[in-house]
Image (cartoon, rainbow, N blue to C red; front, side, top):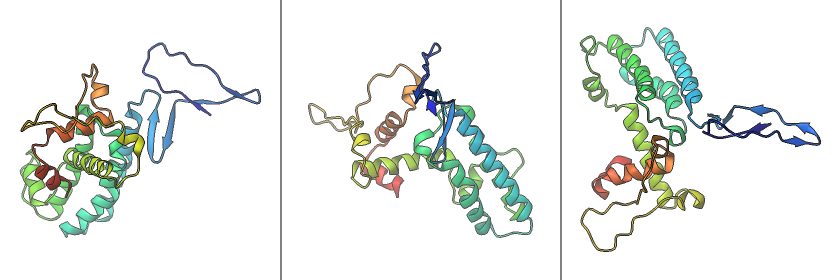
Length: 220
């Protein structure tokens, strides 16, 4: 089986053989639960996990129709639905609005369900921020940022033994002492694809944090 990764519109693709047998070419492959396509856009992965999470949430809504305990429903949602939408998110965390909203739409479905079953007041077509605060939850986008920062913290502090990834981080060493020096140096990037790549995304998230105290508060 052969797999090619390229974003070129005119890719040069060759056939590879073993013992004069041409290896089968595949355009998608699933590795550790993440679907990689030939352009590394993860569009197929987004589609797969949203379908799975939506189906699981529908199962919870049907089978837990008699549940009225918000804590029990939150545990079911977190363990069966949200975990699907966050598994290995450091690798594939979306940057486009349409994909971010498609994930949030699933969590919003859960909010509508739990507010109805547990008699939590909520106006129709209103924003979900008050309900997030009421249930002591945050948006999936914010959770992915927290997961990213926790991963970066473990990588920098040696809790993850991965020198290859650590060597990709570009630590900023200022020539003179400054008050607001950024933690990482991010080179000029021409494309949104490069901006949203895992390493560049992690470094930008760390640079956006105002202080080390804020960083420690987030990862805790």
